[in-house]
Length: 148
Image 1: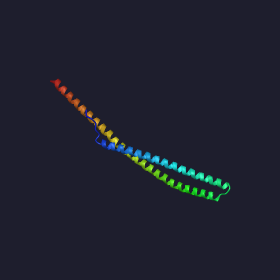
Image 2: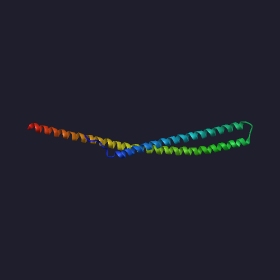
Image 3: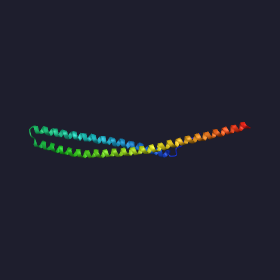
Image 4: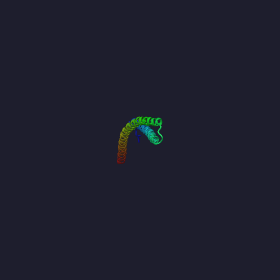
């Protein structure tokens, strides 16, 4: 019996590696998105703390300098929040792109795996045909020999 060799095995191996790379890139993009979202949450929390502190300042003895500093801090954190929201959006787009790339790589890998399955089925059928032919020849030989 001969050994099955898929003639496109090197392509299948390459597609499998590309799929693994795409999965890794997706995981990295997902991690980056989580980090950016965490940073955004921290900025929002800091802004809320400044706002709460500003309210507290206004209820105490009025210190104009501290109120102005607080207002500047709130504005600064609002700007940081906007910038971070942009970073989160960029990270989300990277995750989406990595996800599409991963799905495309998986589809290509599946295609070559199906081709390999079909080639193996054809190989088995050919092996069965060859085996049947050999058995028929053996039976013909036996019959011819016993007829003599």
